[in-house]
Amino acid sequence: MKAKLPQINLLMSVTGKCNLACSYCYVNKKSDVNMPENLLENITKKALNEFKKVIFIWHGTEPTMRGIDFFKSAVEFQKKYSFNNEIENQIQTNLTLFDKNWIKFAKDSGFMVNFSYDGKNANELTRPGSTKQIFNNLSLLQAEGIFPSCNVVISQTNINNLIDINNELTKEHNVSFYMNPAYNYHNKKTSIFIPAEKYAEAVNNMFNYWFNDQNASNTAQNKLCQSLLTSILRIKGVENGKYVAQPASSYNKCTFNHCYGKFLGVLENGLVYPCDNFISEKSCLGHVSSVENLSDFFRKDEFNNLIRSYHKTNEECMQICKWYQLCNSGCPSHTRGKRKDPLCRAYQKIFSNVKSIVDNKIFGK
Ligand SMILES: C[S@@+](CC[C@H](N)C(=O)[O-])C[C@H]1O[C@@H](n2cnc3c(N)ncnc32)[C@H](O)[C@@H]1O
Ligand code: SF4
Ligand code: SF4
Image (cartoon, rainbow, N blue to C red; front, side):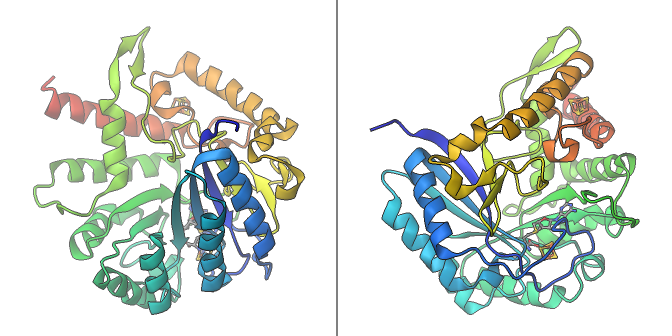
């Protein structure tokens, strides 16, 4: 029997439906298309046959709109096709429909839950109609011993309140969270998206607060600040004016981590992309049923063209940038194989701020 490859992270969009209309949402076209169960079975079988560890990241549009029975089948298919596999299930949801039945399912099946929320004042602007249900369902989850993580999107509505959001989530609600900037994937004409400079300034303010916070929660974490700190602590020295760092340890983080070849985004219709943020005609790798093994997608011309232009960006960054070994050219879904990550200036300012704090406060330089 062929040895299995180490790991794949599958971003599974299982339906085109959503019950919300968030102002920045990158899902351009919502639809009534549901992923059929035979397609789910096909992907599960291929993934477990080829990879030792498979992380299913159940995404959408809104995954709960696909219905709980679909996910019960997902677990059954995983049992049917698993042979010495390590399997993880994570569901990314707006949480509004996550009622008692879903909570029981998550508990019984070990699904990790990650929800979206943008902070006290912003959430009703960016994710209208969701706040009350989010907190209702969050309390029900926590009462059952499930402590979901949160994804906060940074936009014009909350850019000045990142410290408040840190305190609200970690101290009032015992929720760990990550933050990502709202990214304008479809060139929408709206002021919701923020410029790189402003993003850097807000993250730096939050980092400085977080680093010195004497009353931080012992249980809930600010994962953005933690990962920035960990990145800087990976630095081993300097060569030719550039920082040399230990490789990052995690395999399923995306930005700053050479994600190509570690993720696949599968749409509800079975079409496959390098990531679910990276949906375009040029980046489509084909249909799940068109390959024998999922790794065949990484040998397709479409994938190699993307990799080639990504490597070109990598080479340019490597020449000019002292942060390259921490940043790895940022997120390929931002560059779309054409140019440098538009948040480049922000990344440099953020790394620089964290490095000076670490040097000063940890190493006493
Ligand atoms: C597209 S949603 C799908 C899952 C689910 N419906 C939810 O809202 O959590 C996945 C995540 O992407 C975030 N997101 C949506 N549009 C974005 C954008 N333009 N830039 C950055 N993050 C975005 C959402 O807030 C959510 O946390
Ligand atoms: S809930 Fe998720 S999929 Fe639906 S509009 Fe909001 S971000 Fe988009
Ligand atoms: S900070 Fe900018 S120049 Fe440096 S590696 Fe990242 S994207 Fe490239």
